[in-house]
Length: 301
Image (cartoon, rainbow, N blue to C red; front, side, top):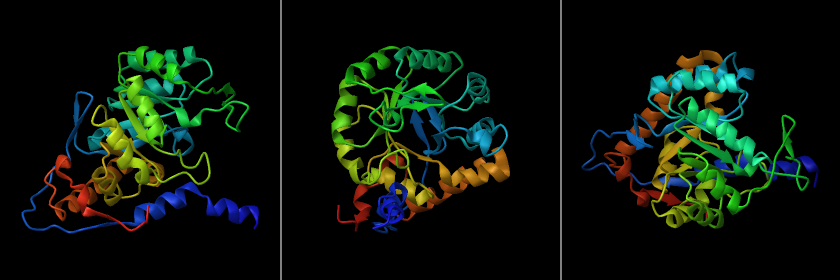
């Protein structure tokens, strides 16, 4: 078998999309009402659980892309996430007033992570965190990002980072019950169930492991989901299986590129409208009343 075919077979995004498409929904029309998509997070209330994913380098999509995205997210009443950025860009994003979760790389130097958390907190971040799935030393090909060495993180490291900030600390890249239990032990303020769009081939689809992670967490902190989310009905499926809120990444890139802040706002609003309609036809009056039993899993796992 050729290398090309092997890579295509193990493609994380394709596998994740196929899992999404194998989740069917029962319809429940009697006693349906106009639903509310509002939700509360870290002391703030938002219009929608559709969030902008923790992306980076958005200036390559559109000049000032990160700031434009944040403006659109704020206008839509949503949560902004962001990844790698120089400090002026971080400050510009936070200056828009968008409630933002700043995700930091797992630098080998924990002090560097703490300094970036402190900077984000100083400029008004809603929460901070780290994408642990991007860790890597000489054992992998992710040993550095922009020339900065990445490291492996122990449970003790995660506990130290949680204690180093007064903001909620979110660990991104949790894809197993084992890591979820360690996050509970570490006292994190939230986790993102994600495979980082395929840092490894053949990862389990996030929604396949989500219900088991939900049981481990048992309501102690919010659980977020990303990877291959395209529409409001995808968001609904993740919420039904236990997510608190859901991030959209690649699907919003074209609206950002062509429409800037207005494009992002419109996309999130359309995604939220799709979510609202799906809630209406499954008799969910609000996010807390989305019933997991409406989801029929035809994937076989």
